[in-house]
Length: 358
Ligand SMILES: *Cc1c(COP(=O)(O)O)cnc(C)c1O
Ligand code: SF4
Image 1 (tube, rainbow, N blue to C red):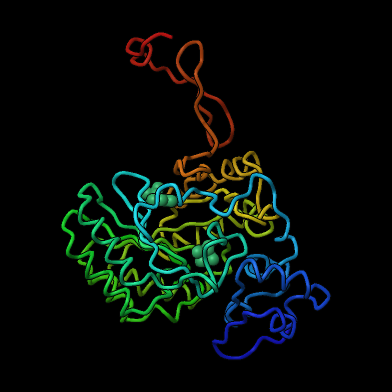
Image 2: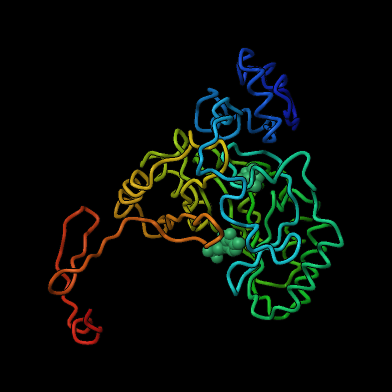
C-alpha cells in the first residue's frame, strides 16, 4: 500500500486505487457506491489498515456490497424525520433533544445510520437561520434538560462555530447537560485543540463527550492523548460502538475495546445493534448473535467495562435495551442466571404478595 503523506484525506475511488486500498477491477461499482454514500479516508486512518478487509478497512473502505438494498432498510432507519421539531433539531424524548450542527464528517463510516443524509452534497454546517430556530425552540421548551449536539460530526465544525453554539446554550438555564457525539477524538485527534476544549467548556454546562469507536486498534496513542486532553479539561467521556460483522463480532475484540475505553477514562455506554441503514446488511449480526456475544462479557469484564446493548426501534420509537435477559419468572419467585450460565432460585416473597395476580 502507498498511503499519501501528511493529513491528506482520500475521497475519490481513484485515490483509493492508487493507494492500493481497493482493487482497480471494482472501480465501476465503487464509483456508484461513492455517488450514493460519501467516501473520506484520512491518510492517518489509512495507515491503520493492514488489509482492506481488516477491522479498520471494513469500516471505512467502500465495497460493492453497499449497493445491495434489503426491503427492511431505510434512508431514515431510526426515524429522525418523525421527530424533527424544527430544522436541525430532533425532539423525541421529553427531557432531551438532538441538535445536528453539521451534516459532514472528517471520515465516513460505511455502516453510518445517517448515511443517506450526511456527506458531500448535503447542506453542511447548519445555517444561522436554522440555528436561530433551534434555539428559539430550546428556549421555549423548559422540559429539555440535555442538549445532544450531533451531526455529521459536530467536532468537525470550527471551534468558532462550536463556541457560538456553546454560548447560546449557556444562556438557557433549564439546560444542564451538553452532550456531544463524535468520532473526532479517535479518528481526527489533532482537532482536539485547546480552542476546541475551550469552546465546549464555555457552555458552563456539565459536558459529556460520547466517543465513537468500534475496534481497539482505533484507540491509538494519539487518540488516547486527545481523550486525555478532554478528560483533563473536566469533560466526562462515555463510549458508543456499533456491533459490526468482521470488525468487533468477537468476544476478545469487544473485551479489548471496552477495556481500552475504561483505560482511557471513557465509560462504556452504548453498544448499538446495527441500524437498518441502506446497503449495510453485510455488517449486521442477528440479534441472537449479538446477545450471545454480550452475554459472554458478563463476569469476564469489570462492571465498569459493560456497555448497554441497544437497538434503535425503526420508525422513531427510541432506543431499547436488547441484551440477554438473566431473570425469569418461576411458579414460585424467580430464576436468575449467573455469569457462568448457572441458574439460581431467587425468593421474592414481597413480589408474590404485592403484585396483582393475572
Ligand atoms: C439516541 C437519541 C437520544 C439520546 O438517547 P440516550 O438514550 O439518552 O443516549 C436522544 N434523542 C434522539 C432523537 C436519539 O436518537
Ligand atoms: S462519524 Fe457518525 S455521522 Fe459520520 S459517518 Fe461515521 S457514523 Fe455517520
